[in-house]
Length: 176
Image (tube, rainbow, N blue to C red):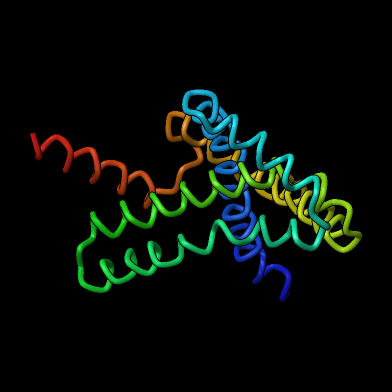
């Protein structure tokens, strides 16, 4: 009974986790392209050489420190949200999110080998990768069902869903 009640929560948590993973996967190549376009490749090489000389614990500091300056940006986004500057708030929060994930992916790419030398970090990394696979497995049936419903002609849709779609279509056409 409790498991059935918590299932929507676990699915939502899995979706959030997968969105983070998706951002990580898709922003890392973008950051790699930026590194190739601007002289960050030399910086990445320089950073990799410095990280090789550090202990794994100090490498952890190198991994964590670059995201700290992003917190004021996120706080500014929340302030804008609290003062009903919706568009500015959303833009600021999304910018901080994308920048944070991109910078973290860049730094993690450089520091991963050293970080994985620490047994606790390697176990944590393995747990995160396992959770990622479980989240994908949990969300996949929901994703397939949603895609099937979107491709269908309305068969299997509740009358409420169909009314919402009709209302949305009407509002779009009336806006023209």
